[in-house]
Each structure stands twice: as structure tokens, then as C-alpha cells.
Picture 1 (tube, rainbow, N blue to C red):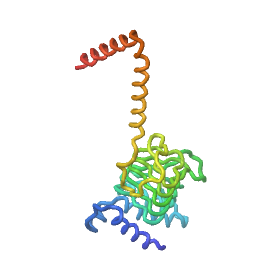
Picture 2: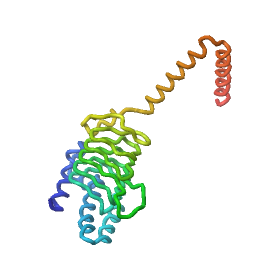
Picture 3: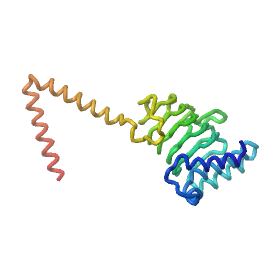
Picture 4: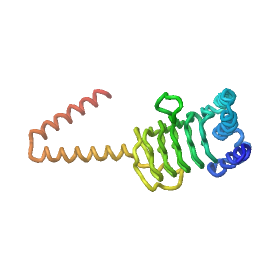
Length: 233
């Protein structure tokens, strides 16, 4: 596919991914992610043909306009949509396949400084990277996988899986195919706290069942805590 065909496809892709768009005017003035990918495609052609400085200059100019940093040597497939886009960083050896959805604040970065090796992640087709997520190192985000917002991913994510947390953990397989169902991501911290609270309650019950001395000490601690709270008012 030629350069202009790819760019035309990127612009048409906005209508498939963002129901908020109402006119072509918005397309030209309100979608920095689309323009960043457009400038990247031009810079990438120069970079691959040995004009490295030209490619870097184009992307430096793009960064000033869009606040999106894409290395011209990165590989980005068809119909990659960077929604909102502000603060996105895509590293030199990153590979992004087709139909990937990336939200604002995402970093696809490296974890070492060794030149000449692959240092950045591979994002497989139809993956979704949530806002603020950091995907670091030569790892693979599988096909149809989803990375939750603000997660830090340092290990590969299998196909059709959901990863959330810091560091990210696989919490769901065979995920919902709707790329926008972020409200359905499980809250692993909430589940952990619920477990701890129930565990503490069971242990308290066991300790206090036949031990009046411990019960009296617990009541004294409650009084001290109440006094502390009143002192803060």
C-alpha cells in the first residue's frame, strides 16, 4: 500500500473509532493522534531510505504540534488510532500491528540502553492500550489484549487477555471484544482489601471468643483511637 493510501486509511479510521466526530473540520483540528501518525508515515519513509536526520526533524516538528513523540524508526501498521493522544511516546524499536487503539499518556518504552537490539514492545493486532499505561521492554501484548489505564506492564500479555495494575497482572482471559468497555475492568486492589478485611474479622472473632482480656484491650484501643480523632477536629 502506498503512502497516501495509508494516510487516507488513517483519516477514515477515525469515523470507525470515535462516535464524537461530527465533521471534517474536527478531523483536521481536533485529532492530534491522527496527525502524529500521518507525520510519522512521512518521516518513516525518509528514515528507512537513509535520511535519518530528515526523519528525526519531521518528528521533532510533529512533537511541537501534537505533543506526541514517535520515533521515525518505529513500525506502525494499518489503522492505528491514537485517541486524544497527548503525551503518547512510542520508541525506536516498537512494533505496532494493525487496528491497534492507543489512548493518551501511553508510553511504549524500553528498559535498557543497548543499541542495535529490540528494546521496545510489540503490540499485536486489535490490542487496546488504556490511558496512561506504560508498556516497557521487549515484550508482546497479544492479539485482542487489553491493558488497563495507568497500568505498568513489564511482562508479555497473552492473546485475548486483560492486564491491570502496577506491575500489571493478568486478571481476565477471553475478554469482552468491545474496546471501550473500560468500566468492566476488575478492581484487583478492591478485591485484595476485601479479602484482608474479612480475614482480619475472622481472626478477631477467634481471638476474642474465649479471651476477655484481649476483648478489654481491644475496647481500650478503640477509646484511644476515638480520642485521637476528636483531637484532630
